[in-house]
Image (cartoon, rainbow, N blue to C red; front, side, top):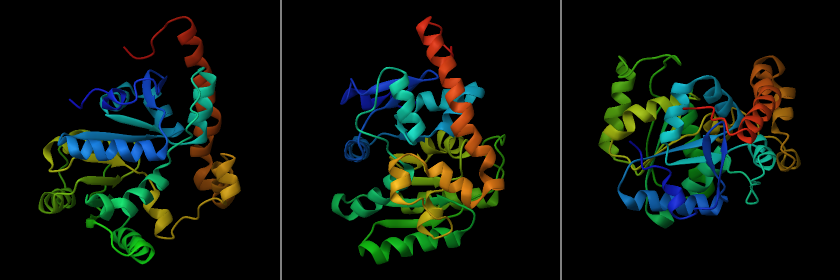
Length: 275
C-alpha cells in the first residue's frame, strides 16, 4: 500500500477531486520539492501525471482507478484538468504540471540534488538514447544511470509479465538502483506496471511519463508556446496527425468534459462515483 496521499501532509489545502480521485494543486517548483522529499523518505511513491485521458480511462475502469487512488501524488497534467478544477469550485491557481516539463526539470536538477534517474519504456531504445544525448548536450552533467525500452504488453496483461525483455528491465533497475524511475509505457500500462513492480524494486519514486521522451528525441513536435499557454496543444497534435490523434483528442476535449459535468452533478447530490 502506498503512503495515503502523502502530499497532503505538507500541502493539506491544495487538493481537489475529479471522479473521486484526489488531484494535487501544486506548482512545478512545489512538485519538485515534494519529489525530493519522497526520495529522502526512503519509502516507495507512485506518481501519476493525470491528464484528461488518464482520468477518463479511470472513470470507465474502476480497477485502474483504485491504482490511482493508492498513488502518493496525482498531478494536474493538461489544461482540461485545470478547467475541471474551476468547474468543481476549487480552481488550481498554480497551473498545471505537464509530464514533459516535469521530466525536463528532474533531469536538469539531478546533479544539484544528487539523485539518479532511470528511463524505461518507449517504442525503442534509440528514443531513450536520443533523449539522454539531448539532455547531455543541453545541461552537461546529468544523473541518468540507465535506459531500457522494456517489454511490449497489452493493457489487459497479467502480472508478473512472462517476458524476457521485462526480466532484463528489472535486472537493469536492480543493478543501477535509481532514485527515480521514469516509465513511458503509456497509460494504463505504465501505472499498472509500476503498481505491481515498484514495491519490489530499489527505487524511491516511480512516475508514468507517457510519450514525454518522444519530444526530447525529436520524434514528436511540441506545440508552439502560445498554443501551450492557451491550452491548445490538442489542436496542434490533431493538425499534425488527424487520423492517429482523433480518438485521443475526442476523449480529452469532448468525452472528459461531459463526464466531468456528470461528476459535478453527483457531487452536488453527494453521490460517490467510486466505492
